[in-house]
Length: 544
Image 1: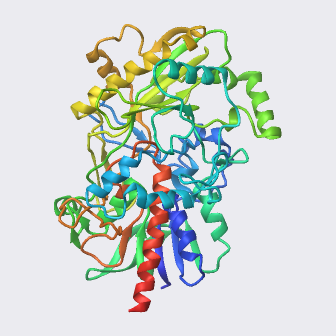
Image 2: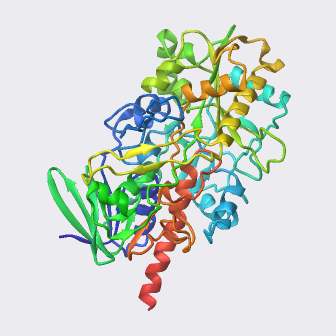
Image 3: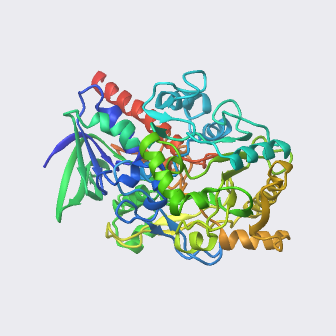
């Protein structure tokens, strides 16, 4: 049986950061377990390759939720990375931190040390921002490269002008002092290639002798001696293997897999564990609860007199775009999941934006995307303006159904189950129409194709949102951080699992509240901060 100082379960965004930081001084040994394989698929490294990897079971878990009664009585497909780099290897490459108020709220909820002033240094440490460089808000030389799009587009430029006409200020740094505004997205791209966390953090660390990586290694459960964690049992190539941890086991499987592994290991709600046939090691009712996700609803418009992404993605134009990418690292193949971002306040009295827009000079077949998860571009020129509510009130759950590690957990997102969420998404759809109706876009507008002008009342817009909305791939909260007296908190502000020794969770599942934006940047920050906590604890043990 092999022994290591630390065992990190999951080589996704957080796991890659931890593998790098915990091995940097050469003294601690780390075992990194990844259920997926190597990130050798070329579609991972071409930015627009996400259109392929989001439906590729070789690199994607492709979870399916239970039928969701509050969003059209249908299941939802949830892409999650099954490869080195995790979801950072298959996501839409968008770099958004969220609002300062998000993290101040974490601190107000009892997560001491997680206010915006506490976490900003870790955002800066991680970031290497090509345009903004190193300043009070940003990092210029961190491992995670952040860059601007290599190409603009006349429709995207017009959307920005339309936003200003509609009262949305131009803001070329939504990750700075304030989030309100409209601009091009920044992306985790370097030299025209996806800069996943495997590229940014894991690749440099793999040369270190004190880091051991095991791929195709499916974690089965955490092992215990009483309430003290001893290691991890995992399967690989048909064998069951147990590795021991001298210091700590750290779960970094994300919002789906970390609560799943906690429950498989006997940590969770006793009723859930009993139903699955798992003996209780530590009763924690909050495991698998508090699920939050961004729910996106697309509006689409038919354009005229322009060449959109739709036309560039087929025929001779696609051949030309492939050549542009091969020779210049420019063009369609460098495109992220959206070109333009906008943040608005849909009603008076809000302290910050409550809706985010992902805007693309192209349009997909909404039904094919919603029902099959297929990204099929429409044949006519198109524009997509897709709102999501930044801070949903709806809550869902993720729980195991059996004690078998390979059995999929039950995911119940409960999208739009809260009246506030319903009102906000309707307001977001109306704002999308307001943006599309501005003079800067009028010369290109032909018709609204989704939801269509006949869908006008609040009730009709809500029905459309329920039937045609989808995940924005941002599940969080299922092992929430909180106060000691909060019966639903799973980890403390040091990310230690309550009631046991030697076990932490470090990933998006610890977020007590969803951040106001795409979640990858915040997940990287969490892992950066956690690495300092873990190393400080080791120093304290030595000093004692």
